[in-house]
Image 1 (cartoon, rainbow, N blue to C red):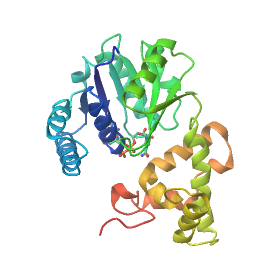
Image 2 (cartoon, helix red, strand yellow):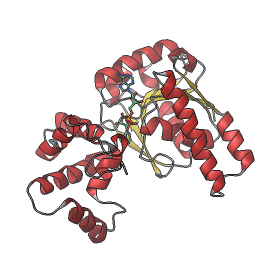
Image 3 (tube, rainbow, N blue to C red):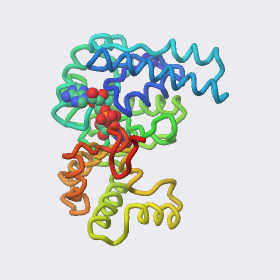
Length: 284
Ligand SMILES: NC(=O)c1ccc[n+]([C@@H]2O[C@H](COP(=O)([O-])OP(=O)(O)OC[C@H]3O[C@@H](n4cnc5c(N)ncnc54)[C@H](O)[C@@H]3O)[C@@H](O)[C@H]2O)c1
């Protein structure tokens, strides 16, 4: 396939996970973080994760060395100039992503595909920030990226068939199942999932049942691997509010309007696993 070198912008939960998936699939990966300390920290965490996989017998030493050698970190956007595909995974904020797409358009090769890992934002608005709108699409991984089987390929109105096909091939080469979805907020999975998560918070607020009982009920009653509060903590409560806001903006359906408790928890800095405290406490 034509894609060999992949740039990833953003070194949060998803950027790190996608870098691991792509490097293991044999792609050269350039990971861009804004700060040197984060970039170095990412590489250290990545190497630690590979070492653990060797310990558990999931990877042999030769594979570990090969995967590690395929990932480099940088703080400089122009280091993505040689990439065939760049996937951005920065904060879920349209203004930030728009600005980033205009910068990527400036620095990246004219034939490179520019993709976003956004969960909900309109991909077409990012495409039109560039001089190559037909080469822009969504490549939406799930969290944690190394473990989750699905990637949604999001097709904005302006994307070419070649771009969508290349994105699909990339996802499949990464060992993922892919589905192609129209450019509507939430695509398939989050449009269906987030009303459920949001209503679980409302149910907690109204005193119907406790956090633990709601989580236990949904695991035992629906055979879900985790309950809604454990899942919200995994996604990140700030990201969850941003996703719900974008869904509400698009559809004006009250089920998408974030429950007040979610916003209050974000204001209090309780963001879930990534901050150590969310609906559950991860600091011990
Ligand atoms: N968390 C999930 O479950 C999940 C799943 C799929 C997709 N996503 C999407 O992936 C993207 C990243 O989410 P995440 O969960 O990794 O978030 P995160 O909070 O872990 O990381 C966000 C990254 O964005 C960077 N950032 C913040 N402000 C910035 C700015 N102004 N300019 C450039 N970079 C900035 C941060 O430094 C960090 O590296 C979002 O678009 C989100 O919707 C998230």
